[in-house]
Image 1: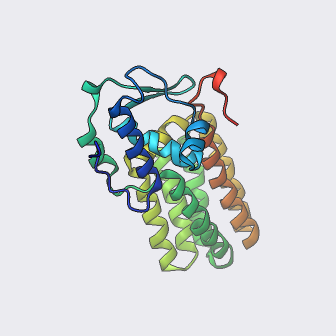
Image 2: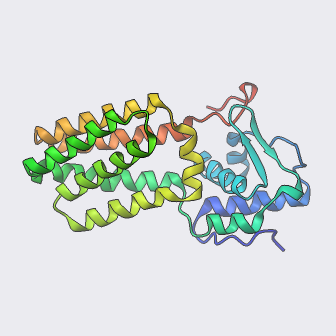
Image 3: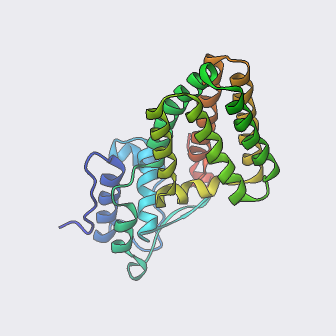
Length: 242
């Protein structure tokens, strides 16, 4: 019988988390042992590195493993594991990569339409949120609030109520345990400044009424976020990933 009962369904990362948890419990990986690099696990399990990384995040929440960025992923002692709490934390959650993938499509289109349909007042409001982000670069809660408002206002300026709903839902998915654990490791002043610059490029395309440029700028911005998540070095230098 499996040690966990995760609601995997079509979520491949939960199936991989289930398999790794069973292997750890069976003794294939001992307490204190470092797991193989992501690339090796992905090859062994015939899944993407993204899937492996999301599975590891789920297992860390359940306290089966500890992720030490730059050092590797280590198995925790059995008495530290909190499988029941972890199952509640990840139940029904969509992995961060899928959220970003969906945002790229939905918010790219909202930017495209906003460049065509936004009123001058709406453009002014979007730019005001950008200024607020820049002013709050060292005040993370205020910065995050302005960031969310910025994206919501672009969706509203698209003139499509369905896009507004979708964008709102995708941003609420950022409150998940998996997202917070992953995204939290990418937070830095430098990255916040880069986001402000990305937003400035989007604003410029909106103001100039260039739909294709606005869509591309939004998609590039989300690509940058995705790259940050994938560039975290979970393996030590002697286990360098491609």
